[in-house]
Image (tube, rainbow, N blue to C red; front, side, top):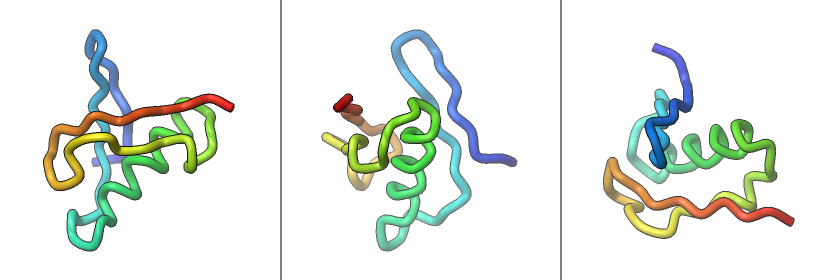
Length: 62
């Protein structure tokens, strides 16, 4: 399977290969969302769900 972002209504599903240990999957999710929304990685922040499959993520502009 590939890394990808899909949209379902107001929710996005993000698929990554990285394991959940040491925050590697979260970093991969943030990086992929930054690419998807064409913003810097520093603009993507996990607000809720650091250790959950379901997350609330904030993406800020400038």
